[in-house]
Amino acid sequence: MEACSIIMWYNKNTSYMAAASRPRLLHGKDQVIRLKTHSLTVQIPRQRMKERAADFIRTANSFKSSLIVSQGPNSVNAKSLLGFLSLDPGAGDEVTLTADGPDEAEALKVLSSLLEHSDT
Image (tube, rainbow, N blue to C red):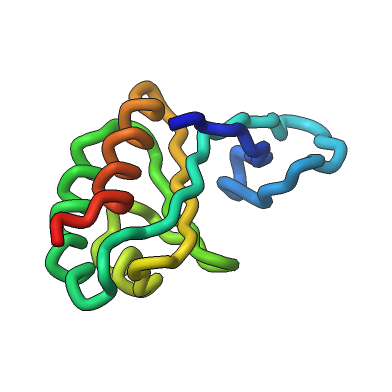
């Protein structure tokens, strides 16, 4: 697995603001943060995803890093069951996992393997 970097900018008053390959000029106390990401194709059939979602969320919550899962224009907290289910990912769908924190590399590796490997 090879993770690439995206750039997000962070403002202490308003949290994460935007993601871009070229961030705009930042002023004041804003700062540039490089986040680790991994894009993958889901291999779990949509019918089985609800069963596997609890395992995904439980695993995501075992990491200290902030984790985001994105599908198309929608992004949710990877540690939220309702958020994850609202994406309704299934086999063949492209998703992107984003991590920021002390165990980000391990989190991306483990969570990616949960979505990329179907046991059926």
